[in-house]
Image 1 (cartoon, rainbow, N blue to C red):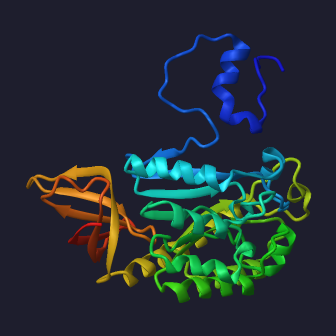
Image 2 (cartoon, helix red, strand yellow):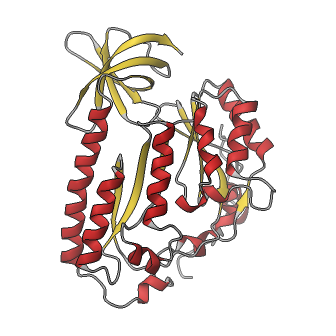
Image 3 (cartoon, helix red, strand yellow):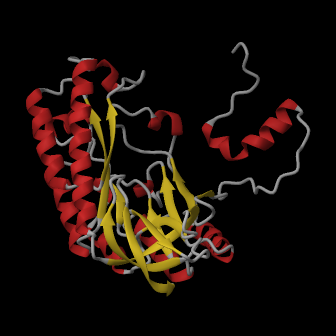
Length: 344
């Protein structure tokens, strides 16, 4: 390919730097980074680490190109993941997020599964907070919800719904009907009434009629999501959805997207208001604001991943998990509160 020096497959991405140095004869530079599959992504001033435990996807949703780009599924060993988390704990990381292209498929080929991994993390590490990344809803079995009985497992999941109409879900080749999805939400909120479920919705999928759209909106509102990632359908070459008949016009996509954004904002507000006067814990991050009266406004996240701001004279909140009483819902989709406890 003209102008391209090197083509590297996705499977070799963890070795990207060394391959470039080797193939292009570039000089080595000193680095403190450890280059391997287990190198975590650290965010928010090193309070939280994202750990990729799995890659690839076995499913073929009609709109998705990821399965073609990522290849076959593969999972890291539980021992490898445990070792990494223990290293992170020794570095004072307070929270890990288990991620993967198809996280619910963890353990394929290892005679294991995601629930077994989480149980082992709870048993063999002292990590304070454990989150899971995006999960396909059809892979959550009844025993999965018992994991959240341990308060180290955070009551927050991202479950991609994609559409609130079963007829559209069939065209997408999704494996979960709306009635099954609703049952999952009930199970989550039976464990914790403040369990935060976020989702993805595709607006304007080919053939989406006005009736299907209204049906979808009604179901989405029943779900009371904490947040919605909204995507206007865009065809990807090589996918089945790219050649489906009856494409939706740009104007209709824009109109439906705006309607859904308004609904999402109302649901977000309802969920925040339900948390007022509650006592919870917050993992405070390194971003703070110094106020004119010399007080400091800190921000962090609750177990169910709602952002909280606290104003105090203390200057040592960074990377601490502290008790907070939630007092006010702010207009920028955040909560504010007062410290009530010592470091946990």
